[in-house]
Length: 479
Ligand SMILES: Nc1ncnc2c1ncn2[C@@H]1O[C@H](COP(=O)(O)OP(=O)(O)O)[C@@H](O)[C@H]1O
Ligand SMILES: O=P(O)(O)OC[C@H](O)CO
Image 1 (cartoon, rainbow, N blue to C red):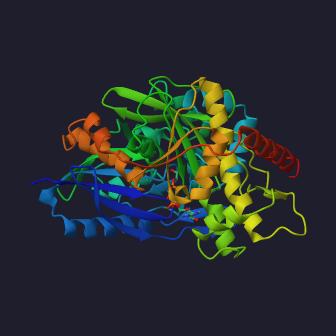
Image 2: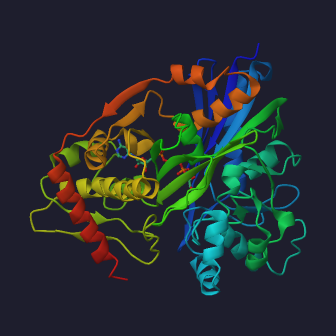
Image 3: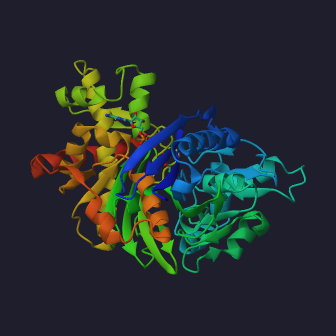
């Protein structure tokens, strides 16, 4: 009897497979971490190692549930990370992580040539090294002397799918395609003009399919859903109506608002992206990405060594007494600033500050940056904020979630399972195969664990936020 779904969640630092039952509950999780490689400004991954971690998790999962018991597999993945590989699935080079900004020079040359307005209109994105296009261009240039006739591009979903299906499926879904900077999100196809501008040949790109397609088979089980991880988290929060929003607090921080079946172009620095396509129906989202969130807590732990564990930051922040501002622009600032050259700065240092204040300033910076993005979303769409779904490692921090609710002036919703990302694509894959009868039944099964509501006075919240805005503008002067 088919009683389980498998959800592959291939993230930036680890791969997971969730085993999900018919009640939408997670029965078991298998996880394997891997290391990113840092080489100057480059952040790289060994795609074969990433694949091995997925295979390890899947093999374990298939020991837990034999293939006759598994109805379908869904894949959700870190987005934009770029792999070039040959027909046999061997990577041409290290994969370039979404976090890597070393292709800025290529982006700048495209901006200089005046490509930006067209690219923005077609893809919904700004020209930035974050997206796949400049990473592909960089790898093609680096290997210019090789025969690249049989060289293929994939984000991690495509690469994993290709390897799991022994090269039978060279496909991606619309949500991942919309992150390449090569995909026209109005016409829902690769934009030939951008391919010409960037010199990226179409034959190396995967076929783009609706998110709930039959993508292939592994171990006799159909793969019936693929979603980029942030879009999957939006689905996992059941933010299925226009105006509904989620914030994922992981290594970086990703804020997505469902904008329904219309592309909503931001006036102030957010990007428009495809949330998902279910059969013929496309749903779009507005997105703001913050590059440094959980990684700044990791920095406190590993570099400054002011905390031993990430969890410890909660208590220290609660006990802090000084208003210190930290702009954690380690790799520039993402939305809505898109300033690659700005670097980290701290304001308000006096002789009596201590590590508690530094920890609180670091957590507050995450809260402020999320507010920067949410404010733009509200003014862009004119949709008032009702509640926000939260997930990701850093969302376990009660101090930060309370501060966030104080700043946003709305309730934050923490649901019972922390694995919202993996759940989203599982819902999608399960709806496709009849494993879940309807969205209504899924919604009934989702349990809210905790609600954070504003406690700080509005006056104080405003005062603190104004201090942050000042700190950002001053830090942007120092380059
Ligand atoms: N209680 C906590 N307080 C502060 N930071 C936390 C806490 N728990 C986890 N983190 C941070 O969250 C991040 C991990 O979140 P996760 O969602 O697993 O990230 P990713 O999926 O991007 O790898 C780490 O950077 C860690 O420092
Ligand atoms: O792997 P995560 O959760 O850090 O997410 C990475 C994003 O998809 C990058 O755009």
